Image (tube, rainbow, N blue to C red; front, side, top):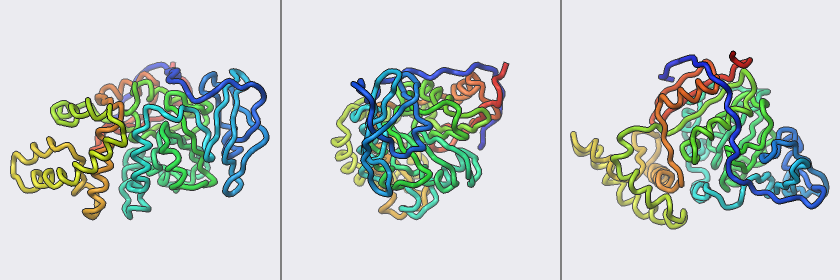
Length: 369
């Protein structure tokens, strides 16, 4: 992957407490079922880590799936609703609202089967280095958005559990339907409501930089992974260039705007500024390659095999993605290595791509002493 291997000694890190979830005290016995009965075997209460239960009545939807209901925790007596086939462990409104807006407006833009490319597939395998067949394996996707990587993971034949903090999880459901091997949750990466040590592989792409504390979010990915399992992540890299571009300074304002208002603004400025950026990059020799980075729009020409109309759509999507998230936390390459070392992970590789830092590691078969 263009990185290097290095061994560290360290101790496992614990699950953080994180933010409050969507829950209420249960006055009595809970009476409903989750989306799939098999999913209940994997779920735990994100508050106390106790097992969850369900009962009757239940509301069925398409294909006999459970459309709505409630899960409850006998230990701490909290309840978690199931709406639209998806268990919900977070408030309806949260820090990830901008991503709900983003993916509802661009549900299929980056999904390979819709755009006719292999862009997402290539990125997935370049980052993870995993084989293309994972039959019989259980995989966790942390932060699925509209499901661009969900599609690729499902094609491996694995059993996939995908979650997202935002309402983009409903877009993922629309894109991938009630696939027999897919489970969807709305949950917080820092309070993952899943049992420890049950996943063969965990991946988290395009997510960590948008968490309030990147290191804490990374730590939360470790408990669900079994001993000997593989972890793959990417995260924005901290570089000097970021702090001298308009992106950094504009975000001081745009990240506080209503997502709907910002999206309207972005759809107005991108079609006007993208040609200017293209002209500077392609037509102005020498200084143009430096000036074009001062134009605050995402640029994909030459990077992706897309027609002009799709390049514009990707630019609008990624420009909104640059300016809308509440958090954009970057880390240094050395910091990622430190995370892996302190966590006791082994056989790890850390590299760089246009998307930032990519890293893959294995959880050791036994604790290192």
